[in-house]
Amino acid sequence: MHTWSIRPIPILILTALTFPSAAAEDKKLPPAAAKEIDFAQDIEPILKNNCHKCHGSNKQKSNFRLDSRETALKGGDIGKPIIIGKSAESPLIKYVAGLDEEVKMPPSGDPLNETQVGLLRAWIDQGLKWPETVAVKAVPKMERATLTGHSDMVTSIVFAPNGSTLVSGGGKSLLYRPGEVKIWDLASGKEKCSLDGHQSTVWAVAVSPDGGTIASGSYNKVVKLWDFQQAKERASLEGHANWVTTVAFSPNGKLLATGSEDTTVKLWEATTGKETATLKGHAATVRSLAFSPDNQLLATGSQDGTIKLWDAASGQERATLKGHGDGIFSVAFSPDGKILASGSADRAIKLWDLATGMERATFNGHTNWVISVAFSPKGNALASGGYDRLIKLWNLASGEEVKTLEGHGSAVWSVAFSPDGKTVASGSQDGTVKLWDVPPIRRTAKF
Ligand code: HEC
Image (cartoon, rainbow, N blue to C red; front, side, top):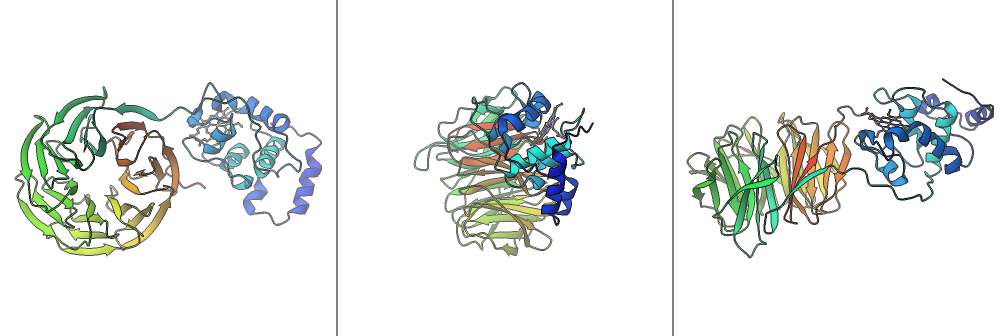
């Protein structure tokens, strides 16, 4: 239905005359109304009659509320719908004008007419003026649960392969003891058991691919292996000359790799705990490591600002990736093994193409160290945790920030996706583990 009032016609002509060389995309859009927008008179009725049913106080389709300026700008599961001053580029305008193939708003019934679209455009172009109204309730949070029980910071978390349990490591700040490893039942959010034995802060935990073994590394140089089912210590691996910062099992379960402030990486037979190699090359603390999905490569990130790739079988150094401006806190392989993600103290996340060793993308958004990065199991999203207390979700197809998860009272040291990809867990210096619902991540780059 297109209802034409008399007023907009001259405006249409006027705009066409004034802007003869508007962008191609602009041409398909009705022009912005050539008048100063009065929110109460021009905009509110449109939103109220056409949008609030699904994006108001009762319902928030796509987690999106269109009844306050703040929530309108923030967007919902899909992303920021409004670019102030640029109505032609704002997804919301494309949705209401029917120019987006995937999303049309409203989804059914009469579309907005060209006058209404023109008014919304002018409103966005003129700064999205929105008089203060009664405060609205915040958009529902994606935070689902908070697991409490650690005495102090949580430094590392990992999901067990079955997805029903989570393992966390932590403890009191560096000088105090003991270190803590805990197993959590995710259905109830309750602590199942605590693995006691570390004498100082645990900085890293990993679970073997068969779910049978937990590895943990501690500030007092010791790595421990634990029987997951029996929650009993199986072995204590000594060899590092300093703080153990990171541990990882190879995907085939054969190797355990550990990194340390002593600048080395050690490889151990995962079943026997026998040390098989020491990899030297980094000039400062090795802060993170990860095996490629095909078990061939080991990636390490160091405080020296470099990432190194090693042949996992021989321990030979294969390549050094340089580009970050500060130490590397975290590295992770994409599930298809083609991309390596890194998080750095320079506040950036970088994606590296492993076929070429070239930097492919940089994500900026965190306002302090990026301490942890994790790929979703499908490889379409990346989660990052930072010293700025935030967790961010990134759409890897579009390269856009999808969501910021706020709730931790202090630095986020560790993030992980559940095996089904529906949950992100985070471990923080505030002593808690939080579980978050992951919003749908679009697979196409639209805007
Ligand atoms: C009948 C319910 C309904 C109405 C009415 C409706 N929407 Fe939506 N809206 C949805 C649904 C469902 C989605 C999610 C779409 C998807 O995922 O493809 C959505 C998503 C959106 C988004 C994306 C938000 C995000 O970031 O996830 C915007 C923007 C939006 N709508 C704007 C509007 C506007 C403007 C109107 C009024 C002109 C409107 N909608 C009317 C149901 C509705």
